[in-house]
Length: 241
Image 1 (cartoon, helix red, strand yellow):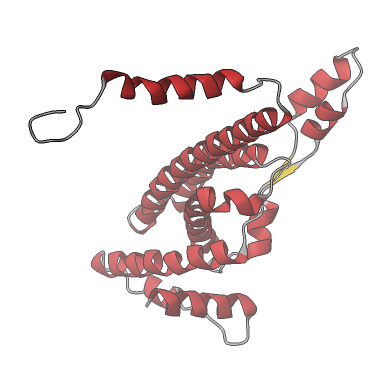
Image 2 (cartoon, rainbow, N blue to C red):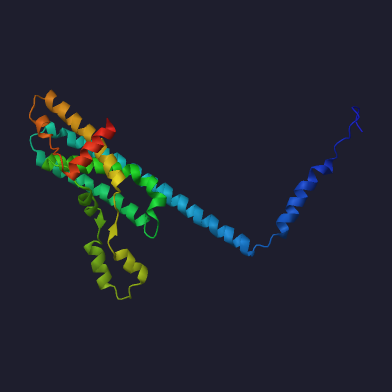
């Protein structure tokens, strides 16, 4: 006993729990079905987390490049050759499409709803950029069906030639890789992208008036009542306001 009347703590009291833990771990069978099942769950969760992070990175790259394309398209009010500007933006969209194709490859055999939150911001920014380009070229609003048709990726001619020249039989996995990949924009992502488009059109009007062009703002009045695409445009503008 110590001076206060209590019992003095023995040194081996701290050692016993650790020794008991080591004994319990030594008794665990590494080939136990329960332990193997949890290890497989761990690998599956790690793979999903890694894929989610890759999709987030791709979404950020798409967002950055789409914003650059939007900034490029805003020069349309100050350049003489509009077609050259549109061709340059189309070339930049090739890089964005390659990132979107990588997302579609990551989603092969996966439920898109589990990973949609990871790349949804990139899709919305892509919709804003492609709809802005389409509006400058045609003075009309691009439809969801048109956007999704552009997101169907077919195998390149080089890959097809290599498959024909190969003497080895094509496996089932290789056949699936040669099939067209598809990444579909959801109606929600489409509407949110169009809602952001209204802000770009307003900025385009302000820039045009600042440059002394008062005709362009009147050309932006493309909304016609009864048109389903225009109704979506009105809904998106009201959401932004």
